[in-house]
Image (cartoon, rainbow, N blue to C red; front, side):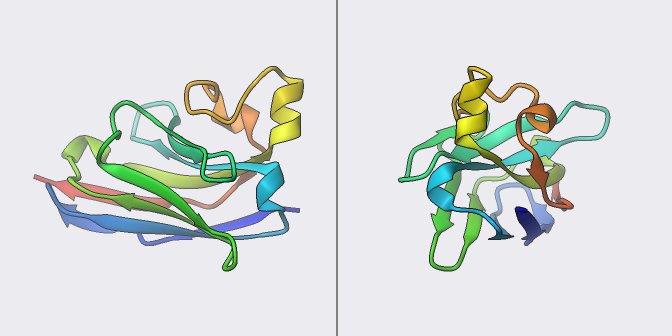
Length: 135
């Protein structure tokens, strides 16, 4: 069973940076789609960035060029480096994972644009870490 624990959230000034970490266990990175999702108050959960293994990544348009997702497979840790943060980035950020094989069974690929119902599409979730960007 995949277990995920996020850390690294906090409050930062607009234009600042944060790095989120997700310690993962119980999975094989080559077989899993892993990513970061966020949910702002009153809004639906949305994809931020995902990695399909072997460095294949995809990003939401709103964060392209500002956020970078990466994996340290030796440490079983997923990261999200967030630069040039904006107040609209304020949200609870979640780390999530799901089997790529299972996604394909449902006709999905490990891409932000495919994972439109992330809580349904991916079955392992962390508890979330809050990011607040103040102007």
